[in-house]
Length: 210
Image (cartoon, rainbow, N blue to C red; front, side):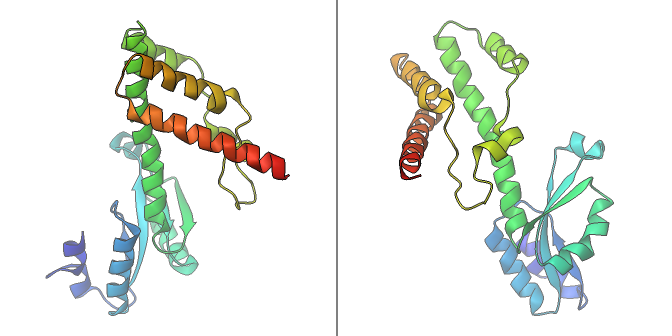
């Protein structure tokens, strides 16, 4: 991407002053800022406008843009972006669009990896993994994202989730112990148990202080 924009015969070589450059690539926010700084020397503007959605999503008209940059530049780009997408999420300053896309995609990748470990534990316990997968698909799972207002501080001052349910203080430690007894190599599960313990202890400390 850097070569395409900053290299010989790159975009900036012929970009006219006042041009708004939209960076769609999945890249680090530091790279976004590097391009924006170089563009500024030619009086060209740049913002990150990252696309989210697999090809089928795009073809169905459900593409979304996750954008970072000054308000006035995002507003300038929005009519163009909405011709290609259903919505534009302005996350904040330059680079936050890239961060937003990365953490969004992290969730999808994390689900695949944890499902992989879950079915290994199920198999060790005698459950064929197609049955385990169908179980997880068919039994409704209430994503924390659908109720984040109840789980996280609405003021935006403390990202520590509340741990009032049994999952963090009982179920996750139990499944980690089960995996150890089966002698399985499931590092994410063990790290989840450690993270759950930290969250539970932090909540206990917070409750004592309140």
